[in-house]
Image (cartoon, rainbow, N blue to C red; front, top):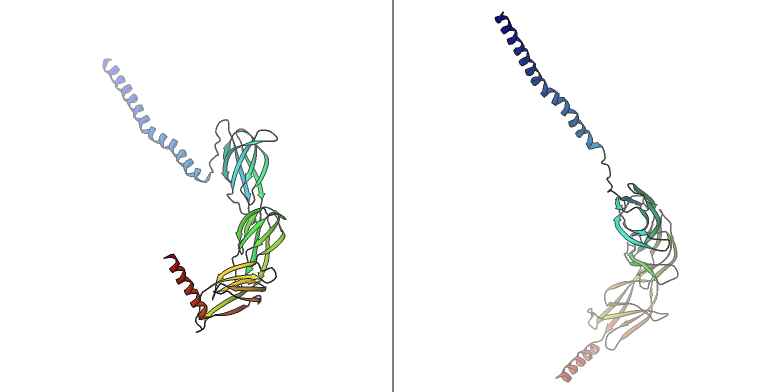
Length: 310
C-alpha cells in the first residue's frame, strides 16, 4: 500500500515538472510572434509622412507662393499680429512653404517681393495649421538690349513708380526680374539714357520689352604728328543740348545712341569737333592730330610749375 502511494507521488511530481518544461519551451516562440509585427510596422513607417506636431496653446501658419513660372518659391515672409483695425505688431519671420508656429489670432503678412506686398487678416486657429495659398503674386519683366555689334548688352536698368522719381529697384537688361503686377517706368543706362514709360506687368505673365539695337559706336582717335597714338581724356556731348553723355579715354570705342555729338579732346589747348554722326550698328571715327608744340607747351608748363614750388 505504501509502495503504491509512493509511486503515485512520483508520477504527480513528474507530470508537474513536465508541464513546467513545456511552458518554458513554448515561451520564446510566443515572444517572437509578438516582436514580428513591431518590426514590420517600423519598415512600413518609412513611407508614411510624419504628423506635424503643434505646441500646446499654439497654432501654425504656412504661406505658399508661386512665381511667374508656377514654381513654389521660398520667399521671405514677415508676420504681424493684428491688434485692431488700425495697427499690428511684428510676430515672426519665415519663408514660403515652411510651417511656423504662432499664437492664435489674425495676422498681416508682408511678402518680400519687389516691391513688398502685404496680405491682410489671415486667421490662425489654436491647435491647427492654417495654409494660405497666395498663388502667383508676381509677374516677370525682361528688357532686351543689343550693343553696336548686335550682341547682348547688359546695361544697368532702374525701375520707377509711374510718373515719379521714386525708384523701386535697380537691375540689369537681358535678365528677367520677378515684380508685383502694376505699371512702371523704366530707365535703361545707355548713353544717353533711354526711357520706356507705362510698362504693364501682369501676375503670372512674362512681359518682354524688346528694345533691340539702338546704338552705334564712336571711336575718338588721337595721334601725334608721327601718326602714333596719344592717349587723352575726351568728353562727348549731345549736339542739341551740349550736355555731357560720356567721359572716356581716346583710341577706345564707346557705344552711343543714334544722333549727333560734339567731341572735346582735353589736350592743351583743347580741340573739338561738332555734329559727329552716330548710326545704329555702325562705328564712327573722329580723328584728331595732337601737335608736338602742344605737347612741348604742356611739359613747359609743368616745368615752370615745378620751379615756382622750389
